[in-house]
Length: 418
View 1 (tube, rainbow, N blue to C red):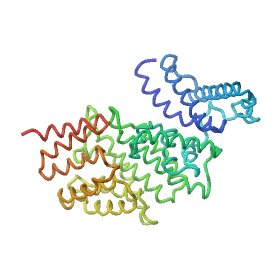
View 2 (view 1 turned 90 degrees about the vertical axis):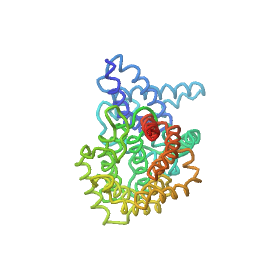
View 3 (view 1 turned 180 degrees about the vertical axis):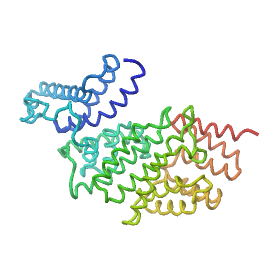
View 4 (view 1 turned 90 degrees about the horizontal axis):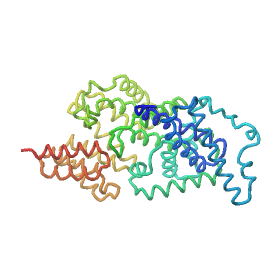
């Protein structure tokens, strides 16, 4: 198999990983052991498939290898502890003759990935732990990426994920889509996980690439599935609208060499007008129906940006009002940063800088590159070029994204020109 096929294999493995995990968890009822087995199967596939070619049924191959790994592990443990009966007791009686009861060669009849989201968002877990586990096991994000999303150290996040796996095991949960009150209780965490996966795909927190369309596209797909299940849930509609309106700008966000193009410099003719129309119609139909939630507010803000002919033509007073409402709904420092930007666009950069000063003491923003980047932009608008250069460089030092670092350094270099 050619080197060019490697990205296609990586994309296929990311797509199949949740399906394989769902099948193994359903069969063996042990989330942590199943995840380990699937990870081993994925590693084996990543090594063998480029050399040997794709198997006839890649999904069946992964499930077979993962099942063999987990059974081998249990047998080894059983032998060590002199309890061979554990091997038999792991597999239900009706599956001991043929493990193909859940035929791995056929595509799943239901959306296993979405069911895994709901299983990971188990009531035995705190919402933060449920989100972390979902993002790691199902979303495929690294522990470092999840830690950045939650603004906590990587070691803290690793401990949180470990405890979540143990809690799932202790709770003895099975893989199934909850109904009724249980569905409603887990829905908020599932939506948050989908939002974070989409956000990581749209703006990658580290590495050379600016985006990961495999993540953002999968989050958008799953949100469509979720919306089809609960079409009258306003916040699910708001989340879908937000993703559509945000993803519509994707083609204009990068230049020929993959460089970052900020919103105010994008060619709006390249925006996906069909996605904008769909997202706008969805949020317009949703807002009057019920109490407004955070995703609906964010979608409304995105719609204002997408419908404007330019940055200057954007209805910034309305954007400012919506960010003020959003800040009241959530304790999110990134919302407060966006509120400072909107304040500057309406009342001038000095007013925006005053809002930033008020956020200086927030430990979640300490050393965060976006805080320094926003300050740099506002200082630039205020005519403080020298100070702006300092903060552009500081922001560049703090980001793990190569594309963002290059953009910030370019801004610092450009501002230094006479």
